[in-house]
Length: 214
Image (tube, rainbow, N blue to C red):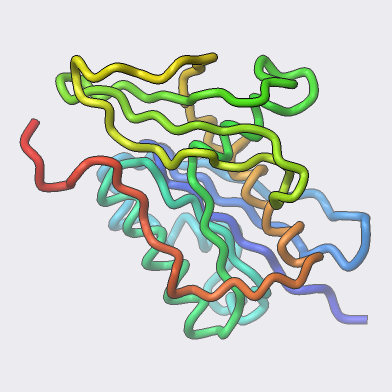
């Protein structure tokens, strides 16, 4: 019997690129995930493809069955590059693509059983931008949402002096490989539910304009 297709996860919403690879589950059992992280910073534009090929060589990309990608908030260039790659692969291979906010992936970790925000009905994640303000979004449990956690308010920029909503609050700290695991988990759920995953709506999330001054 031939092996099931691959699920590929791409996360570049921080200075570190994370790549995850896992066979799409046929039933309840899942094969272990292959994970790798690369502290590329500004080198992402040159090294993105070679890093992905360390897990899955380009000649095997035809074996992909579904893609998941972090849509930000994150750096303008890094987020855009991985989304362009994911959208191109999804279009050329005619396979589903799903995009998820990097804050949502963090929220899933923090709200998991035993996590610091487990049981919270609504909480905020924030990321400080020096001299510009705070990027924040709201999250909470929702049994009807894919994976059980929903983005209640999309991350946006709160400028200095703007009144922040009431908490609880937590910092949106990216853990590249752990968040790639969250991407893979959501991708597996989407596959089990046979969600279509059109590539066109998967766009980067920019709470701030990339052309704004410092």
